[in-house]
Length: 133
Image (tube, rainbow, N blue to C red; front, side, top):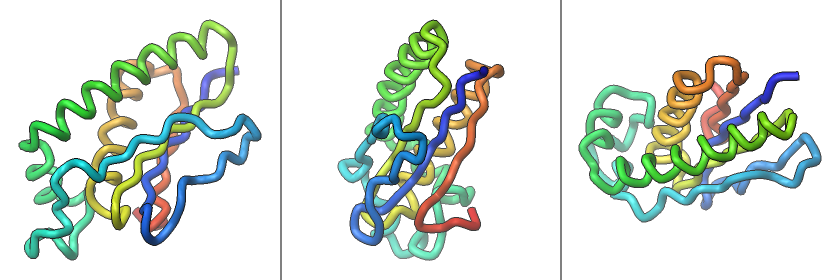
């Protein structure tokens, strides 16, 4: 059975760390709150981490890019290890203040990274504060 990676974004204020439905006890939880918050900038307030303007803004933030580089290195090692052991599930969660900008962006970028690096891995993504995203 192929490895399934479930990626979540969530809010530390409005929600909580997502529950692991597989019974494996969770997985990686990454806190994005130290990165500049587009939600505190008026032009981005009504947008999300999936909107072009926010993506372009966060693409230019060195802290975000260094953070994602570190996350990708950790996740890559974990996926290789999990596949070698025949594990079937990995959960990765990103939290930020409102669960709207930074965590959504990080979750989307991580899903893209995994799909490119590991095309045989099944990736799902859920934005807990915005289920329709």
